[in-house]
Image 1 (cartoon, rainbow, N blue to C red):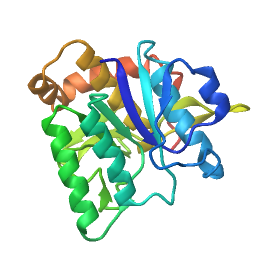
Image 2: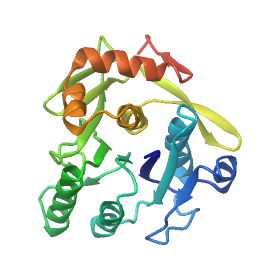
Image 3: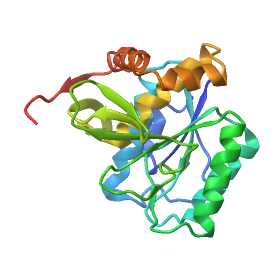
Image 4: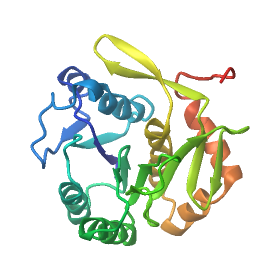
Length: 235
């Protein structure tokens, strides 16, 4: 399966035209493409991280915006789960919730069902905010950033990437930007999973690889080398 699902801000028409044969948009929530003017480059950047590095990758894209509710978001998860259209789901966004209401409980249930079906969800986590969903859910692979001496670390909270690493990504038709943070590094971990699955790794084998810091260091560095990236040592 050569598809990855991405749930993110709407991509621009110009960016879509660049990869028209490799992006399928499923707009379940009828999100307008101009609904997040200040962040309209975010979805472009996340998509390009996949498309520029892995030439076999195709994206099924689900747009959301800052008005999307947890209940609406769950409709997308349910669709992906029911249709089995990809084995990797990249979510570079999340919801802050201090308590587990019925919509959060439904999200946890859907993530569990997807996990049991062999669908990996990779979600961004803000280390400063504890209750961010879906990254807080135990069946989701959480990605955050911190100051580290190495490229990454792995602990009980998930995968942590060195925040001093910057990737040069497409933002809009006029510019590329240097970007760091958990949202863009979700794509790195999702790429790792995508490539492992395409090498016919079993579900148990991948779980073992993800828990191996030595293996992950080597794999993530190999993926980074396919990007234009830099390490800002002055921070």
